[in-house]
Image (cartoon, rainbow, N blue to C red; front, side, top):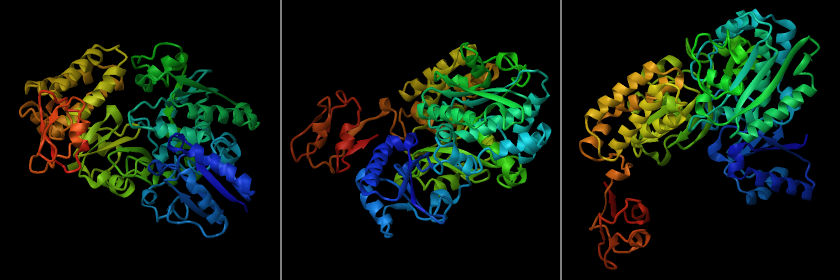
Length: 589
């Protein structure tokens, strides 16, 4: 058997230089006439180690290399061919689930089962890994109610954020009587720091198609839409190729597998409006209308796309479905907690060593995710908080690091599970600044339909800005709480109802930090520029002039080999002097 070389060329890999590495390998293999098969694959999730190349040696033996450069490839390939592999650069030495790799040891791959394993543009690779077996089983051997019952038994809850029972949602659409029904996949992933859906679409698009086809058969739909944001060009490319190939194989379109079941699938590219992640706004966008939420009821299961019964789930939810059908509801339900079954994909970002994608069983603690899977804090600084659930979520503080990750436990903290964005923060993070960042995002993304969402978030942002600039007063905290309550109670959709969450949780857990900004006119984390002051520590300054040479406003003066002085009138607080000083002679207070 020829050695197979898999190069991770998802967006993260390409950004790190995987395209150049693939070309280098292609040239090397052709020049040396090596008996090697070169393949492209998606993201294994270890974005922190990109570019990543895996060598499949057969007999379930693999060696995976990370942190690569093109210049490394000849030595590595020649070592593999000679049977004397270079291991000092290897990040993984057996297979994808080996215990030797801490990042993967606590993970359980269901949604990401094929990501980094198959060529996402090769339907035969998907079929060779049990692809479309579940769809065939459903349409040839099962009834709609049997599938719905299996979904209910599995305990699968919608992974788009709300956590509603998938089986129950499908039953609502099944019970709606209409000759025309639709299935929608919400791939409008707009959370800052979230890239779960993108990676699955790039690495395993057929799993989404198969999950949607199963749903269509169950509820009686013959047409579907994947609503994917246009900022994901590689995901869109792979989806279109996957749909074309599935149609050519008789796995989509008319008379699928000769059963009389018809299902036509389209890709709708969204224009990047965060509010279109809300299902009624998404439906309006597909219909050609402005993406604005609609009053519910009626719910989409009764009156959705073009007023027809419609089922809408997100990428991760659909990707679970084929696995559940193939392996059984009980196999899925053995993972997780009593009310939150299965696994959850998270995008780990922020001040963490192993940033990237992870898939873990529900029930792990935040501590497990950060220190076992994530490798701990970057630069080993103390953990301060984690923002869970994106701009609609909340900040969970260090004292709650042992919180179990399931829907109920996370909700109790004031955060939400959301679609799975997890931004890790250390003590260098200002919580007022974080609240301002996320509120600025939701304020910009408000569709403007609801008065309190449109204007209330603007007033909240103004107050947060005032506090971060040292102009706040203690009454501002009460104003933020009051506005938050009104926005939650009067907004039509989830964007408005959850927009205050980052503010509410930071006030709840980090109120002293707000008070320091207001009373002491001080930012404890040293982030808010207006409250910063740079000074020279005279007994540490050796007069090397490095700080003065970097200062853009000539605010630093002094003789060579003598302590310097910073003019507070000229200082623009850019931090260039602080970064330039090798002797820690500049204080930031």
